[in-house]
Length: 192
Image (cartoon, rainbow, N blue to C red; front, side, top):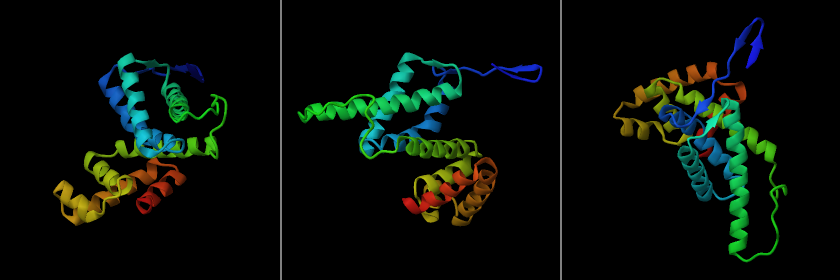
């Protein structure tokens, strides 16, 4: 609980046994966690690790004190899963170099990757909060790398309608996102 003046503002727990809450957590964190994990292991393994993490969370019906507690848990769990995966992979290759939990991963600036993943999480949360069609167009165009013609074809819309949804979505996102997150969103289309 936090106090603000004379009022007490409760911090709501995050109950992952609730399907809607779990779905929202998955939508908000899946891609940023994959991005973060891909800094430690290859992208396919990263996706598998994240899917397994969410499956474990669902099966355990995990409850977290707050969204911040969930977020901290997820990044810590992903880092540990990556370390365990690398350790297992090394053991399978019969390499005898020990890997400890406290040993930093080679060539990785952990804090920088964590910040990048959180900026992506901010983008995904904001995109998920857009009206349905705007959200889908922005997700496809900026996060998945589709061009306007492909989006129009996939959604059964005209290219002009796609452009209109993009414009509306970007206007809404500009107000929701920090400057750096908005800039990153605009640059994402060029990274694909």
